[in-house]
Image 1 (cartoon, one colour):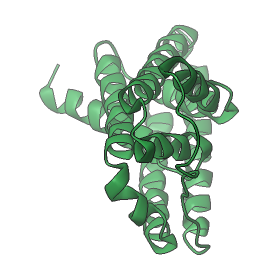
Image 2 (cartoon, one colour):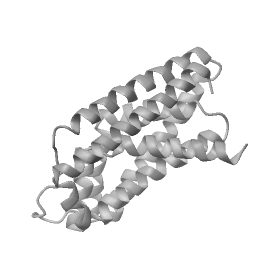
Image 3 (cartoon, helix red, strand yellow):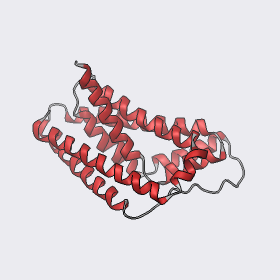
Image 4 (tube, one colour):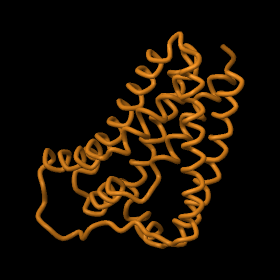
Length: 212
């Protein structure tokens, strides 16, 4: 297996995961809040990153099994994934015209136990239906298009993007909070996400049309 194929699979997984996870939402706000409070940050970051890795791996493995020997289904899912990414990218570009900001909750309040904090993180992660659409269906179907060990490189790339994002958000909260509180920063980030999504959509569409 040429090294460039593994690198491509890794980078595709990395950027697809990154652009999906970087968005204003309850989970990110919760991780940011815990980072600002400096309360069980390691546990929260580890849970969120590990949860994403498990869901991504399960999605790729499950989709790979479902697509085994079914080239028509693989092509159809790749096409649907490309359409979804295109729509998501256009929506991100639209959001870039409408300022938003990520605000963490107040730092006031009683401290919680590690178990309680992780339980809350589990709620924000596992009770969000979008996490299954993003990690299991979309990322899973994209990763399942790869052959053999390239699937592993895709999963590693996608999981690393998640781990780096949550680590930056949790451990760098004091530095990142003022940036994420500025609508202009999110406008620029949404614009970048939109362009990246459209590029990934084009790559997935090419895979659906050519099988390569």
